[in-house]
Length: 317
Image (cartoon, rainbow, N blue to C red; front, side, top):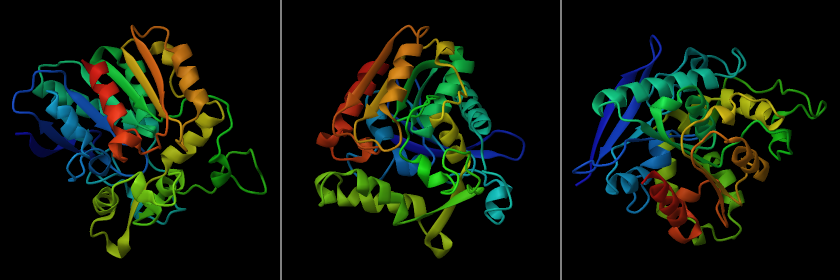
């Protein structure tokens, strides 16, 4: 039977990171680290207590020891001081550099438990960007890299840009992004709802998943809202304008890039650029899941989840 154990792992001084270890009865395959994006934390993303909807459980069932982390500022990891201040008192909190250090700390901790075996990184959205950045710098520590619905540094239209820009100064670096954003039960599923091309959302998403997702993010938070860092928003805006935080040519590990064609975050240009520039990776697979939303691994199996898991497990093996 699959077991789950929660841990706190040290990162930078004063920073403790939540990590859930999900183990099959007999782990026989490479360890896998799942990295969330800029919205919900790790558990809401990858280990919902709904039968058939835990990515961590599915990968563990295939024989992999699996680890689900929260980057600082998310979930139950250390909350940076900026998130305790007025929203406009500090710049957007938690940079890619900090997130990459957190990923490195967890990989080091996994190495101590798994005889320094290379770790497979699976990152969703901004988590995919963070994982790519880590792999470009520490390719010897990464056995496989999987990026799902992630931006890359490509100058191409990004529909979300207007949400961050000053309407009187379109095209300029946005100044209105505060240190953090507030998540509520409603706004954490708003973009998901908009992406589902059916008025009846239950056709695409099991209602029990919706409720579990909202519970995992919000829980018993005071006022029914939680704060998460907003640094990823500013950096994503800049990436969409062509800024490179890392170079895919520096990745020297097998890489799988997946995009749902209904994704509202990444763009076809990101997938194309990664496929073109991952020239030093020994194996590169880039694919688009037709009908896949940004949250495709939490949608119903026939709406992208089954295809995503099938491709990831085949790639890891």
